[in-house]
Length: 569
Image (cartoon, rainbow, N blue to C red; front, side):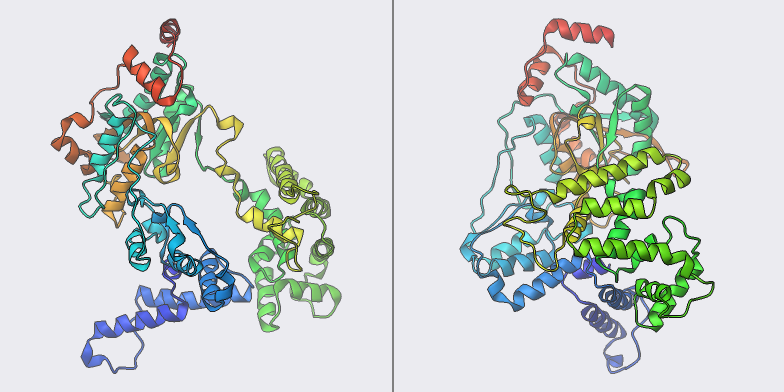
């Protein structure tokens, strides 16, 4: 809720004033002069927490992600010369922008009224829960009167059959901006709409059908050409089990991210504390890694001492170690001595401009981190490999100059007094995630399992969407049914050649078997036009194989190869 307030450009005081005004309206005019506090409702509580949260951020010398936009708008609106250089503004995925991002675009583009270009598809606006404002497209034409609206009507990805069914689904939204799409691809197979008695039967069909398609396409399709798109992650368990049973390799798109692993977070906490001694979360994580026998009560006492002396927790233990402040009870001076020594040694390296690689290696030595992993983690070998990968990442992030290889010195990013190599490495690590890399060699030939949201912008030759049922599409906790309809449209249009929508008449939900019905997004359009979907899997006759090959730009399979693979199947 705080993030949504920031996305609208509301400060803590403005949100508090807004909630007070709303409370006065609710009381009615007769109580408008009352000076009593507004009712203790959720909005008012959030506004108060927002104010406390902002004080905590400032105390830690920190900004959160939304602040980067808020402060950017404030700074650039007050310092107009900072954006006077801009002549052209290009914004992609414009339907996903929020209110504050829109204001930022207006400020940056104040000198480029005739040269602001945005690209967006209102049919793919699926991030309302992240405060995206699809209405920004309409605001654009109002705030920039010279705007010319150009419809990009050709779809270069999907067959005509897939496009027709997808458009039928999204066109049910009566408030949608009317537009049609066409494709130069042939009609291809009609998308399949299949129903099963249970989620287990559904999952079994998906896994067996993938193997059948690979065989009947005679080598044109591989595992990596298939995607199973889910409305939410919990649907994956049964499907993963079925794929494993059939021996089909698979991966979770955007699964466990590299920078979320325990060992990586441990080491980055140390480096964050070296770079920003005021950053309390980093102190709280690093102080007892490796274990120094410092309990939660002791850490809490350090925080209390820091508050009383208007110091940081790190300053408190440094002063205790130096004898400039009395010890606390139970005593910690002996326990934290090695920690303080490590931080000071690393701080000296950072201030001298040492590379993040050297600082990391020194950190590993100072705290004997490999021994710590051996003693505390049964899978320490793989975790130690992750540590080595962090060092590799640091070396790649540092030496990124095309000219002389000097750390972090590029024409676009000159060094300044506040931008040490360590700080720039930390910035790079915050914005990176190995889980998002799409080109990992070990994932190239695996069936992809992903959420519909994670699949946006991607494409696969074959897409299968399970659980197309009421309660899933639209999701039972959703607030915006039309956004859910657009989400299904986005999922369908990820398919290039073949599309499957499946459902189950009974599904195990929270340990209980419940009856389910087909999503109205689909049942409505099939009632109006039964030809949109086929209720069986494609036969994959020679003519079908020819169309799939043509759409994918691949050579048609040899007939003998098809016969061989089908026989093996």
